[in-house]
Image (spheres, helix red, strand yellow):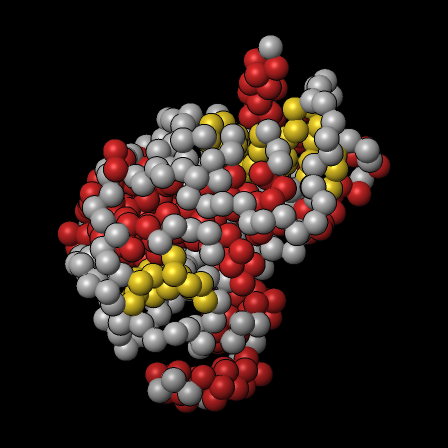
Length: 475
């Protein structure tokens, strides 16, 4: 039976292998191999709880058997039991101290537990044991980024690319570092690797028409298509005017909620919101590929602000005509985005600001986070506008009536900046590349001021900075 199970396993007949190993245990309830392989097979079938039981029995029978603890660590990680997973990895490093995989997996576990310095030590050991261990090298680079040592991280990504020149993740991470450092020339080149990332949510579009190379369009029609989030579309739509200057007819593709404001972008001849129904075109380009085409540097970021206009009013004013500074608030990023939890805060964090005199507060938040306004402590203190927004045209109309916008890193900040409105953007510690490093301003939006966390999750410190700035503004 054991030999039969091995043959099935070798020939990838996994169901038959599992049945044979189960039959082995009926005859020999102490067979370590059967327990271990059944645990492995059940892990493959995503039956994690069942897998764990078999692996625990295998480890109980053979505590020093190699690889069993690593597999059990992987199962525990899937079950969300991260501390136990790390313990398994640590045991494996003691059983097999020269096994690079054991140290690499311990690094993964420590990274999951947000222990970057410990993870670095594990990755370093793995690389010393296997000098061309690309996954461990990537782990080193990512942890160095997390602790803020971008130059060292960049060096490790370069080492990865020597071994794997087509490693899309390394190219992408390099792009974000280079762009955050203001090294735009190479940064935009590396940025094109985003299309080859395995976990990319928006795949590269496939059109019969060629990709635009930046040459004079000579009256041809070009489709500029969007990617990533609403804020990205708002930020990079400014390039439509430069494209039109190269004698082309610009068709801009975007999501329907963006239509009212995209129709105001200089150089845009038409806006389409469906890839199936767009008019004929000759060439195309992704919006976020335009900085590379135009060779944008920090000094040449297009700054024709505002490049969006507030659409004509549809109804009564959004903001009350009362004395005092009129300030709009957006405290949460779109929940569907990968790092929304890092960029968002709870409305409770803003409570110290609500006590400041001479300010009228208006909520620009939409989505689930806007429900926080229903809490009794905010009654009568913040006027909810976001619940009335039908699209970004309404958001722009409301912003147009305000004196100042306070927003986390989300599309509201981009919209206010593109409209030329005074906007203060509240940034997390792990900041997106576009806000660069160590700056309180940004070349993308001249009317924007940046307030940064000085430690992960420290929104209280950011709010303290805002309090001082509002006080200074009111003097």
